[in-house]
Length: 233
Ligand code: CA
Image (cartoon, rainbow, N blue to C red; front, side):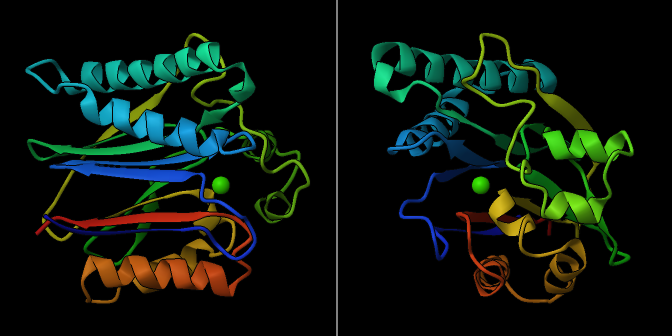
C-alpha cells in the first residue's frame, strides 16, 4: 500500500475546516462546517475519535458504526461544553482495507472513488446532500446541481443530532486499485473525467494528490480542498 495526502485552504477561505487522518489501512477525510473555527474543530474531533476507536476482532461494519458514533458523540459533547460552537458539524468519508475488501463508510458529501485496472473511475459514495436528492428525484440535472444556490446543504452530517446514519459498502479490492478520498472542495471544481485523467498517471500518490489540489485551485479554489490517494500494490 502506498499513499499520499494533501489538504489545502484553497484561494478564498481564511481557514481550513477540512481534516484528514491515516492509520495503517484506515483513511479518513472530514469536511467541517460552522463559523469561527468551529468547522475545523468538528472535523478534527471526528478524525481523532475515529482513529482512536480500537479495531479489534469485531466485524468491520460494527467497528465503523462504533467509530462514527464515537465521533458524533464527541462533537455533541464539545458543543454542550462550548455553546459558542453550536451548529458545527462535519462530513466524514472513510476507507478501510481489510482482508481483501475495501470498506467505504460515509456521512455527507465527501466522496470515495476507485480507479480500477481497466482505467474506469467508480464513485463509491452517494452524496448526502439536498442537490443529490433533487437529481435523484429528477427535479434538476447533474449540471444544474453544480451551480445550485443550495448545493452546500447536507441531508446528513456528524454533530447535528444524537443518531447518525452512515452509508456503508464493501467491495473486493485488487492490486493496482487506486482509491481517492476527497472533500467537495475538489469535486466542486474538478469533474470526474479530469479526476480520472490525473489518477491514470503512473506517478507516486503524493504527486497525484498535489496535482488534484492544484487543479481545484486553478479552477477557483473557492473551498478547502483535501485529498488522499491510496494504491494497493
Ligand atoms: Ca467543503
